[in-house]
Image 1 (cartoon, rainbow, N blue to C red):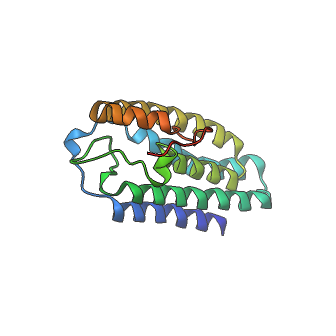
Image 2: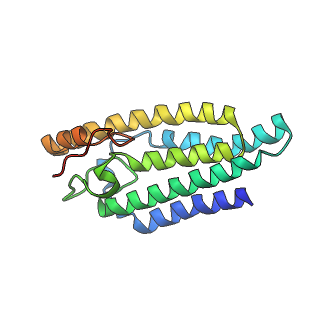
Length: 186
């Protein structure tokens, strides 16, 4: 049942993103290795069940299902809200679209990359669902490395496009977690 729920939530993520996603300009894509972000998620989708079934030969503890469900729902919620807040400026590729601006409202008023946080929650949730610590460790390292690389490119692109406006946004928000100090009102 938990696996069906996970697949449903993950499928809902892609369907919702496809309906929200705008048409984007492929010619401006600066991320030529975008698939590196998805590879660890795909590996985890297959490795976690194999790790649980072949190595541990018993079901995951029941608490894992509850924790995994909470992580999955949180990830899906953060991801869908973040994606909808980007609106027409959100693209699957690293590009600045026509008339784009820096989004400073909603979740983006606290963190700059909430969609990557959402995907991280999904990866952790799937690994917890299967109680697969080695899958989480290996895929977490791969996913983390891919996201750090992508964020560096993305933030350099945004600084180039928006200059001081994006620089002040960096100073006001956390990259993946909200800053501990109080937020300054604009």
